[in-house]
Amino acid sequence: MRGRLAILANTPDIELWPGGILRARGNRDARALARARAVLRRKRDGALLAADLPEGLLPLVPRLAGEPGIDAALEALEHPPHRATRDGIDAVPGLPPTRLPTLLAALGIDGEAYAARTGLALEPEPAWLAPAGHDRYRRALWLRVDAARAWRTLVAAAARDGITLEAVSGYRSHDYQAGIIERKLARGLELDDILADNAAPGWSEHHSGRAVDISAPGEPSAEESFEATPAFAWLQANAGAIGFTMSYPRANPHGIVYEPWHWRFGGTARDD
Ligand SMILES: [Zn+2]
Picture (cartoon, rainbow, N blue to C red):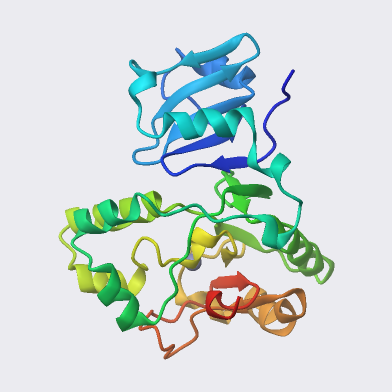
């Protein structure tokens, strides 16, 4: 008998979440989700597709069998990826970015030109992510296993010095990033302006599961004013020893705005 999934298992079209985390929009499925071992979630729009219950798979949408990517998701349910790999950094494979061309085309982004212009590396999504606690909104925070461990170390070290670090955002999928840009386009913003603040889907460090946006209690999320906080001063003095680097300093070569809140565990993707 399978126990509750302890990780976020990732497949190209569908994520597998541990049960008990995701909430149903209505009450109808709430009890099933609460006792599910795993919940299948469509990446494109976040729709909940099925709950894996002890007595079997409960579809939450009509025609589950026709859902794109369902076979890969059921395979991952049967053989969760972390059971097949060692718990090492290099053992977390990246997923082939099969949906990325579609996402870029829908947004009118030329991926090759974008990569050439920014010098950013394509960031595949990991095949699985480890729990790293919660963000400031009490949502589950997911990171690659090595980054999750380092994040907990960072938070504990800061706490010993009287500093509270709050995560604003950790792992996010290519689909999620596309949704952010789509909503800004719908509000009438220009694509080039949006891309100064948000990496194109596929090129955000958040896809790698190694980047965390950090804030402190009472501070806004993702604002340059973070650089004036004791939390930022602490990070500048101590985060490097734990393996975290600020990715986008002032006048960075990628054309991304100064982001004192965005820190990455490990070297750049280009020297991995
Ligand atoms: Zn960030």
